[in-house]
Image 1 (tube, helix red, strand yellow):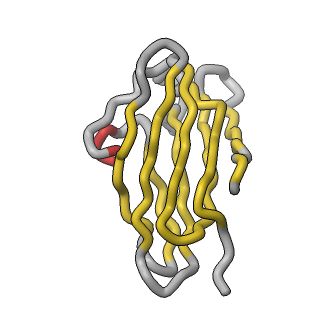
Image 2 (image 1 turned 135 degrees about the vertical axis):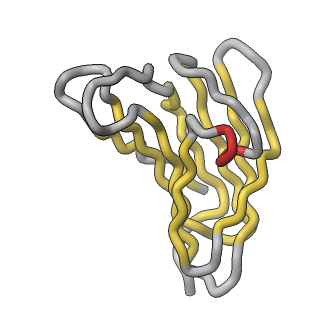
Length: 122
């Protein structure tokens, strides 16, 4: 039996400002790990504190692979733009149980930081 859950929530999205402060680029990413022998269709819903949500973004989690979606790259989100410095949250719904993780690279300070957001799953 493969591990994971079908629904994931990440409540602390806030794309960091892009500054030229070293070799790493500030960003947030969403990772999917699919241990099944078949692909899983994943739907991403983005909720904001100050505007209507964007729902129904479809991506593929390939069989027995891990993928990373850059949340500052609209091409990874079917053209959806998440503005920097905007509070948002994510709901991930997967056809098959998967493992999902959220991470942020923040280069706005001299000491770069990497933040992993542990989501809630059901």
